[in-house]
Image 1 (cartoon, rainbow, N blue to C red):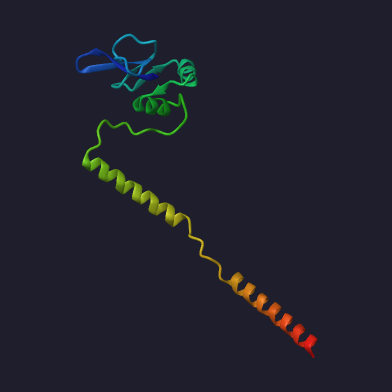
Image 2: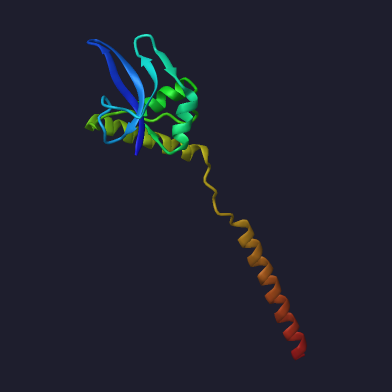
Length: 144
């Protein structure tokens, strides 16, 4: 599977990154299929060939979460940001669960629950009673 990701280049304590496309299993610092652009995190300077990025995405390549978020921020692609975390610690997992609970509570508040309507049932009961009463009256009249 092909992946668009960052490959570090530059001096010590002053990194710059190449945006490359390569096999996911391969070393990102090795040979890449194509260099799509560069990113300087100190100046927040992003240089990318947007057409080539869209081409590779259309061919089915994936993106790392960091690249996905960079492209969305710079409006190269559209979509939702992804969470770019390395490991799940107990603290992070607990925070995520709390956030999910809050979202569910907000959804429940926004969507009022529909209570079953009892009125139509009562009306149906009354109508059925009326019909049975009419049938009984007819039977009584026939007997007389």
